Length: 176
Image (cartoon, rainbow, N blue to C red; front, top):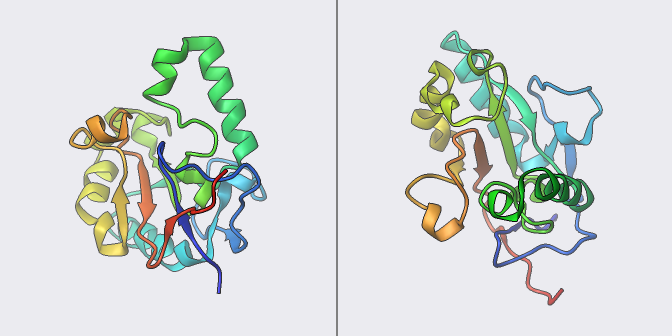
């Protein structure tokens, strides 16, 4: 049985950690087919498929933007943001390497055509964003970064970022 982990800025994952059960997500992505960011933990496979299908049945179209992200890829994103926008901006918007939920394989960023597939707060006011906010929990997903929990998480509202609530998932226990 594969063990699943969660993370936050206070409970980092080790640099080497990659979920052992990554599979290509069964949803459309704005990325090449075999790009690792199209991968999710196998426990997310059916829930994300069902969520996208239900949304589509309402005439709405979600697009996967980024799911799994390695420690190294997160490091590149973080360092580029610090260089281009500064540490203060970056610390509220980009997870430090090892603390990104994407590294767990349980999280996915989604968007839609109405916001040109960008990851922007305006997504929450699109038909897809409104539908997602209303229904994500029915498929086992939570919004990790909301206005309500910004003070605790330290991150801005990200209405495009959802994480699967995997039964038995826990913080990585070893000292790193």
